[in-house]
Image (cartoon, rainbow, N blue to C red; front, side, top):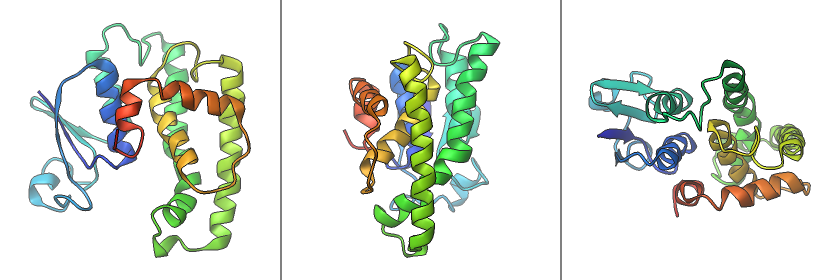
Length: 208
């Protein structure tokens, strides 16, 4: 039985939970992180010395980092290669979007989300928030352009791991109280994701 460690409200934990739903994988889930068991506990650090969620335990195999975890799950349990194609060029396109989400898109929304939604004092810097909103908006425009070309999901007619990671960030875009341009393709995409049971269960900050 697969075990997932990490609090349901974490966007990175939700990547893993949604992936399991898409693959129809049974798992056990333990809540770790702020408000739950501390990731500084020796039991957790023995599994992940980086002290971050999520952590995946699959038998005697333990790993962390959300994008690495969902790649592993797709490689092992998605025998048809629906979420992560085996063809090198198709796979590279999926992983390109995944890596961009982790390195660029996440950083763009961090200040607005942490200030306006989480209300954390450390992010109460109006100029930095405004700069981040401008950058975030430019990235959403890029996603909108891609979706206007594919007309369904990021890489075509089928959902992939790229949509799981980008889709959660799109939800964060709509759940943050900022002025948003009417990106029609992004709006249609968000509605399309909302039809999937995995997104309905885990897309909305860990609540159905």
